[in-house]
Amino acid sequence: YFDQKDYSKSAEYATKRIELNAMNHVAYLDRGLAHRKMKAYKEAEKDYDKAISIKPDFFRAYAYKAFLNLERGQFEKALELSSTAININPQYGYAYLVRAQVKQKMGIPDFCMDYYSAKSYGEPDATEGVRLYCK
Image 1 (spheres, rainbow, N blue to C red):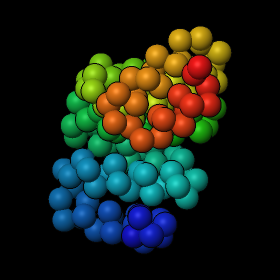
Image 2 (cartoon, one colour; image 1 turned 90 degrees about the vertical axis):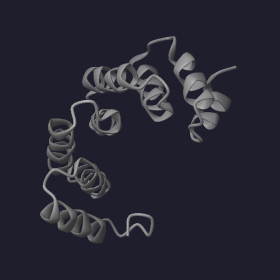
Image 3 (tube, one colour; image 1 turned 30 degrees about the vertical axis):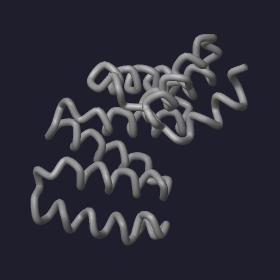
Image 4 (cartoon, rainbow, N blue to C red; image 1 turned 180 degrees about the horizontal axis):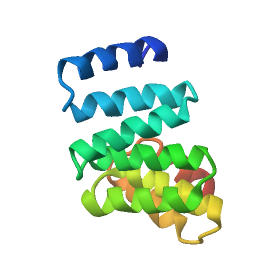
């Protein structure tokens, strides 16, 4: 349902997965992402936090929560969370992509290093950032 952009249905099915196994950290991440797409930011944050509480080294949850904070204009928090994701998994391209976007918004000049890292770790959206902002 998520790939079909039916975020309500995606959240509904993630909830069913959680009901079947309340310790399924991925189901909370999936539901959080659906909530974020629906602009239900508080619910998304709760789900990301729950995923992290179940699996404290869940780097994807930190990166997704970082993007949530980026969307909300909470750049310091987004920078901290994306850096945490990178510290846990230094090869997670998406976290570098988010950190690059945050640094760019904050005016931190080394943001291109993160775009390049994201690209080197296979993050497809990093190519556009490199092309547009890093000469």
